[in-house]
Every structure is written in structure tokens, then in C-alpha cells.
Image (cartoon, rainbow, N blue to C red; front, side):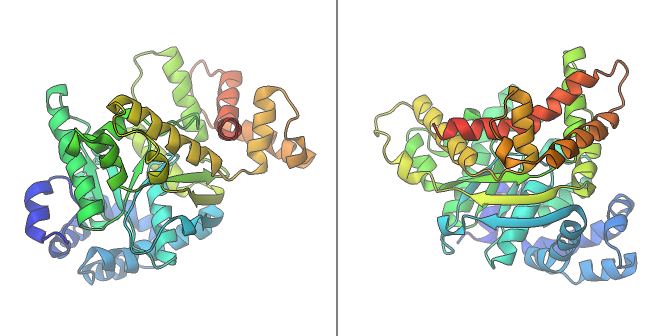
Length: 387
């Protein structure tokens, strides 16, 4: 196990809080008006005074997760889903730590819901990778580091990027192998807006930077476990479709901080239907079949393919996915998986989501097709992974 000094000195600018830093951080949070405005709508039936006292009673990250995050998340799950399930637990061992790599649907909830499932299984929650582009206010940085998040620096120059990536690589390796603490990270920077999930080789390259000369061994030491996340409904689907049209019509379009906030709020509060998390198999056995002399780029390509295929094989599908696939391909390949009522509900849902898009020059057909792709591409990739 690492010492507090070791963690503080080497990774102080990116790591989660140490437990010794929790009380002072909570004092900062409960006196921050921005934090209060963000939290008050979701903390009911507690009053702000009751919530603040609960916060002040937390002396560790575990206290914070157990006393505040867990009950609030359970409340959110009850309000915004038709049930949260997890499976594939036999693919991990309780006494081991892992690097969980998942597809990325929701900015906030992908990791948060996974940690709730771990909590329910009485397993240690993960540390969570979060991009510094989402730390829009200082109180958000305090909050996520209190909730076991570490920071991925993205707003740095090209010259600084290599050193920043090496530091992150060393931190993840140190956390998984020395501190025996599991880590969650998305398979790519940003969400796959069309649900065509692909692991970025540059991400895997970052993992190996702490031991450049031995990329295969570096990946194996992290015990990578692919994780498949399936939401029946994506509350942000219409916002993602809107972004596709904006990028089509304005090639230099860039999302703003306000857009990120809207996506986060919509994803958290919107209805998600059934939500499923399924753990795949650790890729170490498959990596073991790669000859030791294989070049680095080939190792990374192969590892990315292993992760992708494991994620594709372990998706959970709902009628909406099968209807969308048949609609996208113009086929009736999965007509046995849904009813006419399911088709009618899908059309009604599509129209409802497209109607939410507020754009000058709104292209209804384009938006509709983009949302169809979001629900169909998982089926397409699943079929290809089975070939």
C-alpha cells in the first residue's frame, strides 16, 4: 500500500482527495452557493441544513459515498430508470484490482451507476477518470475528487501533453498495482455520439507510457476488464443528434461549457428505462497469446480489438435496438424480437425527441436518422463481433 506522502507528492494535482483533506473540502463545499444551487433540487426530502450536517459528518471518501452519494443515487435510479442490473461478476475476483474500460454513453452516470452496483455487491468502488474540461467551476473539482475521481488533463499544449500523459500512466499503474484500487475509464475521450463504440489506441498507448519498452507487460499488469453499458433510452439522444447537425452545417462548430452542463443535467434527470452493466472477461489471457517480440503499435491494435469485441458481445438489447436496426438496414432481420406496438412506440418516441431539437434550418430527416443509428449501431457491432 502507498503512503499518503507518496500519493500527495507525486500525483497531488490529479489524484482524488486524501481522507485527511475531506473535512476542509466539505467545509468549502457547504459554503459555496453554486454547489448549493446544484444540489438542492436533488437532495429532497432533506433540507439544506440537514444535508449540510450530513456532509460535515463525513470524515473520509467512504463516508461521503456511503452516507450521501449512495442514497441520492438510489433515489435517482428509482426516479429515472425502470431498473438497474449488473452481471458478469464471476469475471472478477474480490481480492484483485482492475482497470475497467467501458463504452461511454453518459458524462456523469456511466461510472456513478457502476459504483452503485459495486457498492451493492459489497465490492470496493472504483476511482473514476474525469476530463478537466468538465471541471467548469472549482466546486465541481472539489466534489469529484471527494467522490474518488482523478483528473485527466486535456487543456494543455502539445509540448506538455507527453509529460501529462506519462504522469497519468504512472498514476493509473500505481493505483491498480500498488494501491490495489480499481479504476474506471471510458474507452475514448468523449462519448461515442452515434453509439459506434471504438477503443482509442491512443488511450491504450497512454497506459503503457510508464513502461515504454514493454507495452504488452504494461497492459497485462493493469488487468483490463471490458465493461458493456446499455441504456434502454438515452435522454441525451436528441442533443447528440443536434450536435451532429451543427457539425455538419458548421464544420468548425465546438461545444460550449453551457452545452456540457445541459448534457450533464439532461443525462442525470432524464428517463433511461432499463439500464444494464455487464462485465466481460479480463483480456490478459488473450494478450498472453501475442508473441513477446510483437511491435508496440500491433500490440495496441490487438488490445483495442479485444476490448471492443468483448464490449460488443456483452451489450444488453431492448426492443428499441432491434426496431432501430431493422429501420437502419431496411430489413426485418429482428422482427421476431419486437411487436407492432414496439414499432409504434419507437416512432412516437423518435418524433418526441426530434421535436425537442431547437435549431434554425432544422433537418428533421437527418436528426431522425441519427437517433435511429444511436440505437441500431450496438446491434450492428454485436453481430460483427460474433462472426
